[in-house]
Length: 157
Image 1 (cartoon, rainbow, N blue to C red):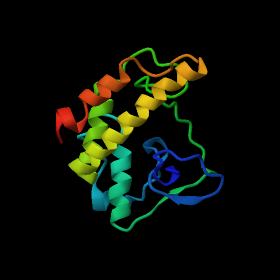
Image 2 (spheres, rainbow, N blue to C red):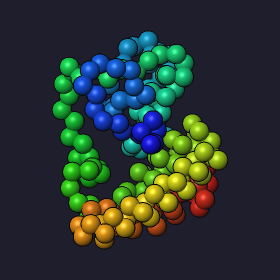
Image 3 (cartoon, rainbow, N blue to C red):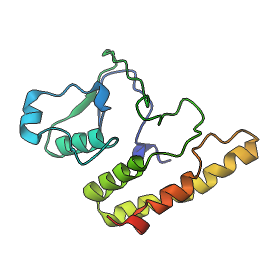
């Protein structure tokens, strides 16, 4: 039902236009960098390529996914933030800071507040899933409380 708004939709099987690609696999024409500059240095890590692609798209350029290209991206190796193993550590502060910065800057405080509310509500249901299915909890410790304490409700915009 919410597939239209998926941040990371399934990997397409054919070349197609997309909203953003990971910075590790982006091939950017020089003219785009000349027009927009480099990625926003205000981000320590995460969301900078999403913002760059959003600004480029808003200016009329397009972003494409090309499955024939091959890139080795060791997802989360420098930060430990990935979806491949149970998370035993809390997410780093810059993960929350980057997300909040991206949403407030590009979509405004109200949109970000609503997104935070919907995320937190959904996560409350998500954390019940391992209990119901009798599976181990693989989420980082204190994910909900860390998210809420870093939301626009407590950190502003």
